[in-house]
Image (cartoon, rainbow, N blue to C red; front, side, top):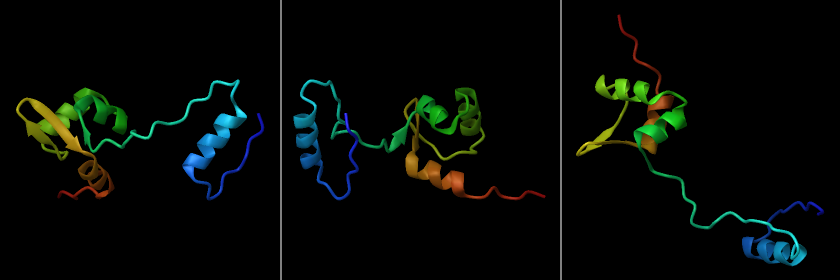
Length: 93
């Protein structure tokens, strides 16, 4: 199938053209309802940061990372985590 460069083409136009061009091929399009998660669980944050869940629990226990506890669940807001990542560490003497 020939690749085409899309510049300023509306999504509906692209999808209808792609469907017409590929009636015999099985193509999948991204779903419209995919959204970026605003809140992470411990396991999701460990994947996001590339560290173990034990490391996340240690940082929570020592208050080194911003978190919210809802009953027994520990949750992390994406915006808070991104701000925490980009904030330089405090110097201790």
